[in-house]
Image 1 (tube, helix red, strand yellow):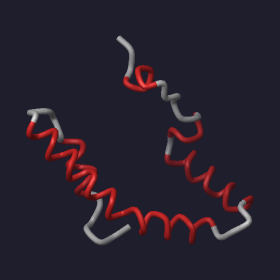
Image 2 (cartoon, helix red, strand yellow):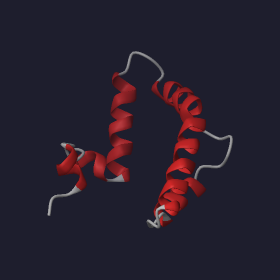
Image 3 (cartoon, helix red, strand yellow):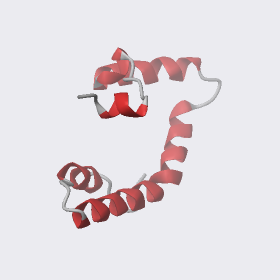
Length: 86
């Protein structure tokens, strides 16, 4: 059976992005190469889309629960996003 990624044509992330340490290293390297303050940009971006993300997760949880699907992981993810925070 194919994975969800294979069914939708998505490619797995590069090996460096599969771990927290790899992501930190990649972000550090990008910060050095970017011609702007990357941390400031990411903070602004995620503050801007934070409310949309929380609403989307709430909708997915409601829809999944209504269909009798397991939504434990979505609820856990949503609980980690405090309301009003990026």
